[in-house]
Length: 85
Image (tube, rainbow, N blue to C red; front, side):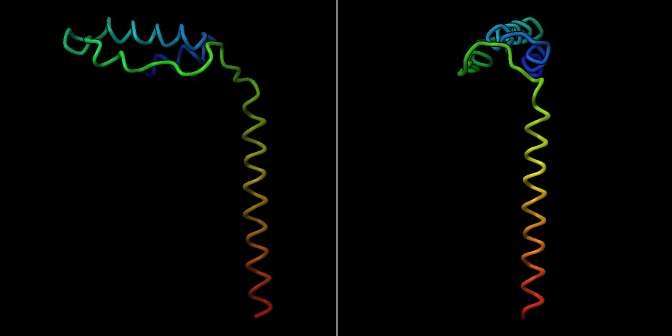
């Protein structure tokens, strides 16, 4: 699977990356491990296209900000409850 994700990181479409990873596994395995039992069950269940990884920082930024706001709000809420009691 490492080869699959390496190929995706290089911009290869997912179907070609999976095929390359399977071929790499078969060529680098012994005769027993090269049997389809070990690699044929890995199938692609999404659209075959190169994955866009250029905008992932935006999602991480928004997720981090949301987590920060939730934790900060929880802290303020807990602090305000302690003062009233």
